[in-house]
Length: 124
Image 1: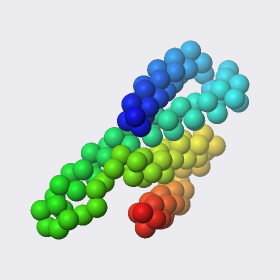
Image 2: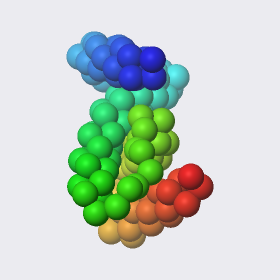
Image 3: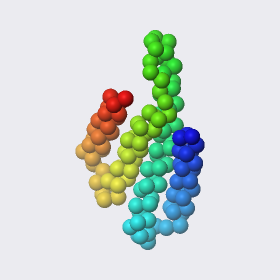
């Protein structure tokens, strides 16, 4: 069920985001419209990254299964990791929109992502 919801929401976000990008410009859109664009980018990245992380996690699980009996990697766990990882593009676009994309900003976003993923991995 989660897979279907993610696939449909990602597809819907892609369609709406494409329509918004084609029909408006940043100087003519309302601030709420800009917020909608950021939310749509997050939803799209969340769906894509969830299936990517699930696929990579499944490959790692199959590789580790030959050596020992690891814990099963589920779509929900992939969703948890992807929900944190999907914030990175949104933060980068947000930083870029205010003119701040220096090396320090990228390092800080990377540190945040690593710490959040570590927390999720240790949590369970």
